[in-house]
Amino acid sequence: MAMTRLARWAARSPAPVFAAIGPGRQAETERLLARPGLRRAATPRDAAILLVAGDLPGDTAEALSHVHDQLPHPRATLRWQADAPDAIAARIETAWRDICAGERDEDDHLPDEPPNAWKGIGPHGQGGKGMMGGTPYGRPMAMTGTDIRDGLRLDRYTARFGPFLPMLPPGLVLQVTLQGDVICDLDVQAPPLAQAADADAPDLCAARMLRLLGLDRAAHRVMHGQSARALWLRGAVPKRIGRIDGTSARDRLIAWLAGDTVSVAPPDLPALLHGAEWAEAMLILASLPPSALIRAARGVEAA
Amino acid sequence: MQTVIVILGWTALAVLLARAMQPVADSTAPQAMPFLGGGTPDTHAWQRYHFRPYSMALLFVAFEMEMMFMYPWAVVFVSEGIKALAEMGMFLAILSVGILYGWREGIFRWQ
Image (cartoon, rainbow over all chains, first blue to last red; front, side, top):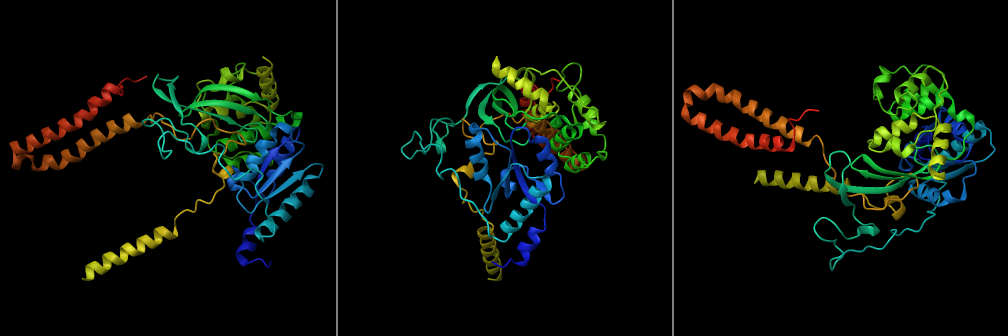
């Protein structure tokens, strides 16, 4: 099929890639996505190419199917095993050109039906009493519980986040109960996948925090060995959050930006994140080096 | 007649534009799920939470409206006399209900 001028123009833009990262591949994948010609997509909805790096454990297969099906059509899955970064970058660019030309697409892995059947209380399945009850599209409505911040009775929303959430380390599955954006319950369901020591590299850790702050360009510069060149960066991280062993999240970001490796004792994750707002909690998690997070999450699971 | 044609024309145009820009809900069941990195939610995403700036916004609007109407009121107060005073009294009484509500909600307790 001949490419239209519009499709050719689209093919010249950076390829939007969403990465599902396997054990030991975090540093490599993050450096790959910082290359020119590739764009790290924030969500599957924003991506056209799903990059599966390394061998994912069997228990993440269903999660990977969810992520895969959330990519819009047309889409492509690329498995990255032993290729050199140059080779996989070339494969991604070829796949992106094929996608833009309309020559490549994949079907859903999961069936196109809601997780449970529509079920309500009323004669037409319209719901329950007042604003609560019923199970529209297979899921019950959130029910109220006492808020941990000021005692208001607010809805509790429970969901499992991960293992491929970009702001969490790959493999980590957290079951979080939120009231608004306040974390009132947190349970580690699966620890992050093991990563080599190069995942703790200062530039990668700093870039993770900067991306979370929305400073993508600064993160890009840091990963290419330049200074972040962002105005009053330390002010973007609240002063007292994520305090472990006398260093706060802000101190760790400053150390990483200065090129120092940070090592902290594995913290007690549920205690650290309980009562934090969602954005704050993600910043705290990003301010911990992957090695500390892995040990912390394993400790919680063993206990 | 011309007015009617213009009104009908604009209405038709607005309807056509709305139809053209209507989002197409053709997502599959997996795509309709919230993105949780492969995880699944227990409950529906529709939930009630506390919109915390609400009471501050209420207080702001109460004082802002007061100021907005008091300037023109001050200009005509001398010529209108007691009638203007009574009108402003009623207006302030209504606004102060909002402030009292905020007081009950604890807006003035600074931490």
